[in-house]
Length: 193
Image (tube, rainbow, N blue to C red):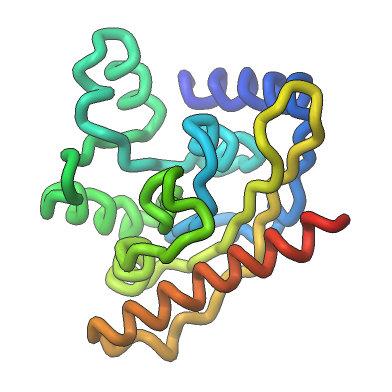
């Protein structure tokens, strides 16, 4: 229930404050495991990634956030789970894979941090998707969260990563490059429009 309320509230905030336009929601499968792979520019990105969609999106969040009394409880109830600073724990990876095997949607920012925007992707998103057999949907956030300036979020078509199922480090590297390339391509093609 809290997720539905939050999603509705963020839809209003993003529409009124940032004139958000969302495209391609129909590209997100209506059921089954999905990993949404998105560029990362702001702390506002996680709720933006999920708010235009009807499906609930789960995220990994810094463990320290769960220690903040009200915030920790709230983000836990809306589908976030903790990850320790300095790397993803085996427990977090297991939980993410289990969520995907249960047919849920995970939101992942392959760049890892906002300071790496436009940089190299990390292999975690590809690894999760391949291990859980999840669909991968590239997503591009376009804009800068400036009040009353237009922003876009674009959901691309699910990617075929079947060529990278070997599980080797090279396969993960190539799958990650393919994901990052798809995100950049979405960003470039919709930035001009």
